[in-house]
Image (cartoon, rainbow, N blue to C red; front, side, top):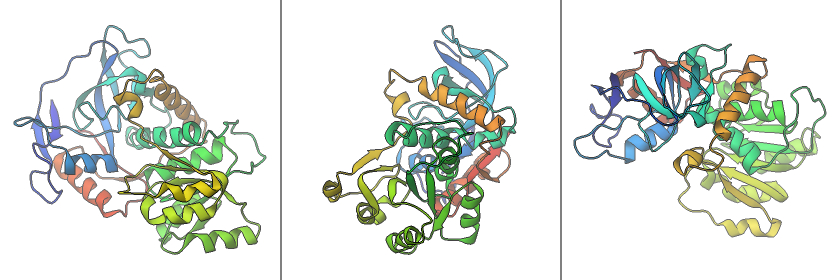
Length: 345
């Protein structure tokens, strides 16, 4: 089968950072599905692994943790899917990735693809959807409600780095299922327009101090005090301001990798800090591993009902080394809006 991989962790400017290769097609067993990959998306985890993790000498590492495809074979213990099913998933960080024509993936982290989306549109969703869902409902413990509910709650979520992949779906899930007010951060016209189109109630500029901007919104009666902060990038840069912004017993959830944080700054308001890592369930075979299957099924239904839209931002063509290198380079620049997707081999 065709695949894209690498033999040594390298910068994306290196010719061998990602290369086109041929590998044996894997065989499904146990609870694994064998999926013929049709489309993929690229995430920051892809370039972080490529930059830092080399495979065993003489072997290739295949990365990629967002995919849409067709189930072509199932292991003997599979109960949730059958050959012919169209699926979407993010997979498992410890296993071979989706930058290949065929991939093995545990059925408990897979959902049926939304019927109303193309393969590329659906590929944009799994990893960021799982991340946003776990952040909102496992870490923030926000109550879920019907999308038809109209009354707002007193919850106010500040989403820092809102125009990226996680922020793009988190805004939509929060507006659809929680009733919270969402304040998004964005600094460019394109990113401001993007987060507004996804449902953000207010937008502030993260290149400027956050507290004066939010204090002005509160004074104008446009938002209430901030109760939750979804810190999707630059947590170390903004951390000191979070303690000032949050109400007592407020919550912060982060997904990035700061070098160091002084968590004692949170003590006087009894704030809590959560780390969201969507691979934790699969990496450690959590007892509730199938929670990811269930949430992907729920979100697929919300998409098909018109409540959630794809977060695909740019389609870079077929799945090959050249196009994946371009996708990695754009993500590393920090200027991507929405998700970068590729389709077909």
